[in-house]
Length: 199
Ligand SMILES: [Zn+2]
Ligand SMILES: [Zn+2]
Image (cartoon, rainbow, N blue to C red; front, side, top):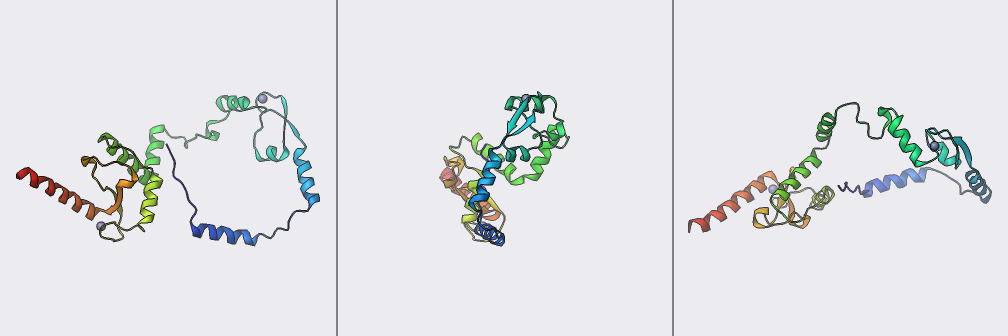
């Protein structure tokens, strides 16, 4: 599943620049560069935390890690057999999977709504799909305003051509509407449909 794209806003970049400008660092001399290079070329020897064999690594890599292994397979075995569960990368706080999922849902309401809507569209046989990032981008493009009344209200996804009329679930067929405008559109659509039926 694609994850959201986290774009840096202008404000974010500006604050980064500001922080960087505060760090006064004179350019490294050729001598220091050579020293750093030499230090890193030197290999540091260590015992593998799993099989105990002697292995070596660059000092800068060695220092970065808490545990040291001779190979990826030793690391995999260590993770599988020895590493305490609370230190596993997949550790979920010692709760059951269902409880962890429930907590995740509570923490990610926007993503849940997105997944629900995607399933709704898929079940109605709609072509295509869009990502949560695309929907966020669309709202940003509309300045978080409703596409019909232009008011700043909580926005819902509206399919411009309704799914029931063969509209797709691509982002090009979606506009942000407030609840009020969305339900008005639905009412109007249903009335329009009823008129030819009565004729
Ligand atoms: Zn090993
Ligand atoms: Zn509106």
